[in-house]
Length: 147
Image 1 (cartoon, rainbow, N blue to C red):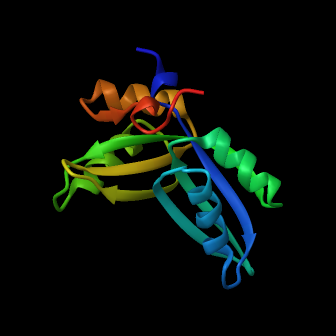
Image 2: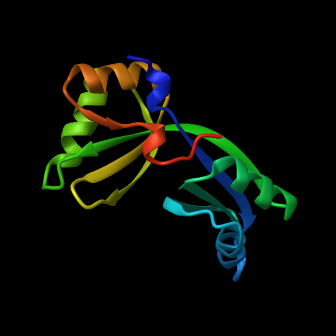
């Protein structure tokens, strides 16, 4: 088992928090036929951070960077969890028991399960802990085209 197979490249886009900025980002990705698979927006002191999983992260980086956005990559993992009350608790407990800190997270409900996107302080340890305890991680190839 290679933990890198489960490491997914997330783009983070920093932008002034004002009307039209998300539209500009989404429109640019649409122009390049880049599909947004999951995203979140966080706000702090007048600026926003759009975190997104897209099917073509390198193309998204290139396009948004050329438009003047500050863009970076972050490694995240995605784990399927039961889409029932307590599903999030089970995953949070698994990682807490393994001594792994969740720095931030967002989720979406898919066709056959809820999917939790996690930024953790120890990616390889988290991957091993989740698989060892029977968790179901998604691979990067489930989200993104190969470069």
